[in-house]
Image (cartoon, rainbow, N blue to C red; front, side, top):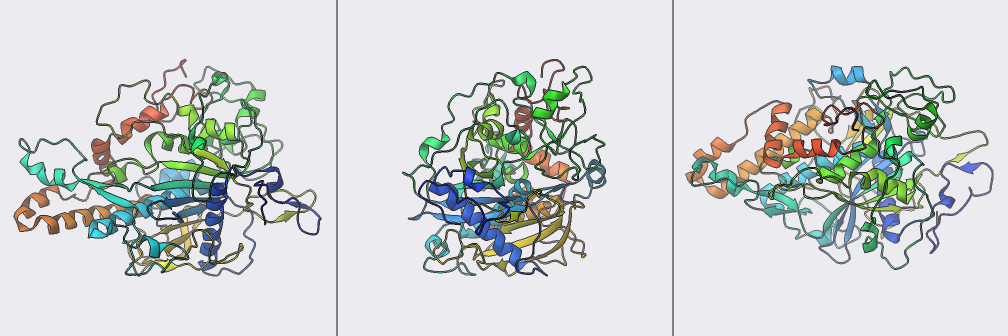
Amino acid sequence: AHQGSSGMAPDGPPGGGGRNAEHAARRVSSCAFADNVAEAAMMAYDAALARLPDHESGKDRGQTVLAAVVARDGRVTPPIVRVVSLGAGTKFLGAADIDADTQAGVRVRDCHAEVLARRGMKRFLYAQIRDAACGRERNESAEQARPGGSGRPGKDIHWNVLERSPGELSNVDTQANPDKVTSEKLGGWRCAPGVTFHLYASSAPCGNACVKRFARGGKEVFDESGTKFDVPPEAHDHGVPKFGAVRDGQLAFLWKRDPGENTENTENTKNPGENTESTTTEMENTTDGTRHLDPKITKQVVPPGCSTTGRVLTCSDKIAVWSCVGFQGSLLLARGLLVEPVFFDSIVVGRKFTAAICRRALCCRMKKFFDNKTRASTTKFTRTKHPAVLCTAKPFDKGVFQEGQGARFADGNGIVAWLENENLDFAEKLEPVGRESKTDAPALPDAFWVIDLVDGRSGKRVSGVGGDRGTTDIHGNDGNGNVSGVARAALEQAHAFATSAVFENLENENGAKENDANEKQKPEPVSYAERKAAASAVSGYAEWKREALSQPGLWTLSAPHRNARVAVGNK
């Protein structure tokens, strides 16, 4: 699809008849950078899809939602814009399946696209830490890593987004605690200056970003002054948001409607738990057992596929929390790994985009984060990150509906892919396919990836490429190959490998004199809960996430999250 200087997509399917699956002609891109990110994400998705086993070219997998994390590396000129993880899917597990997987952690509980992309991003960061711990954190081959540049990524080329940050993990008194000396020397890594991450979503994230109330939406105005490599500086300025309908659910967190929930629905016959386009009639809900919601209000503020009770927060709510504590989670902030949280610098949205609504949903409703608590000078969580919220008119779904037809997200499978270490044999090389592929296109997916096809209804891996499928070293598998690389068990393995690489490198640097001290610092095999507790003790992540979940106005409609501090009658 061509795009004029106005940033508006063309209208109508070629030759007429039916309608486009996306009303892209009604959208105007915010800037060239937004379209660059969207194009890179779509190209990477097509390449990943083509590499899956049994894939037939042009096979219709039905409608889905795509999300991707795109890295912008400004350490070279012009900057590199490169996809590092992606996810596509619309399903998640019900409460019973989540409970059954509590101990093992071998199922992917939430296969919505944004969640899969974020989990793939965590795998990418673990791979980058392993690579950096081996002394390859310098970006000496950045130009070769550029798509269309002087070379292609290979076993002798290492593109790394991290830089060393020595001695910043703790304030240990080495005089009083000599056994902690190596921990103090250990330090960790942070994203290098000039490197930023950007989230693409082909549709507005489920939840609050789909509540078309409390804000007026106007068309975007295409910023002609920017380049395809840069976010317009003014896009980060969200002004001073004012919320006058908090009690009516303007800021409310919601749950994804459990697939097993018995919800009367007189207008929507699609499967619960799916993204839908139709209108849902909700029964009257309660929050704390005392306040009853007006069904008319509920219908307006609880979008299709959402509920006031559940086990899985909506994607809008998860992204809002990430704007406070970063998207890396707690384990990546453990001793020796990342020394500070990682945030999205921009969020690019396709369908159902309204700037004021997306800003409210994805960050601005968290504006009082920190206001209710005195910050320690050493905390890593110093702000609410307000990413640039941008629109792209680039259509993801180019299908055509006949009269009376609409979007149906019936496919239960999800796709997750991430960029692994470029010198590892288990990663799969992707070649660009489809969607107007050309040699000078942004972020050609020609690097090394691991790709999983996941059954979103069971959380189990169906097939994939890349990785050692018969062992536990990449996917946490028991030999059957049913565990995705982004399931909790596999992420624990990735965490263990990254931590081991850090300590092994420390031993090599320190030499034999400090081997005994190093042994004291080596992590012992522990449970997932113990790992999270240890990581939070270093970073304070758990406490600050609790603070984010406890912001005023978030639980006016829904049963509060178990970790939220919410006083009854003061929500």
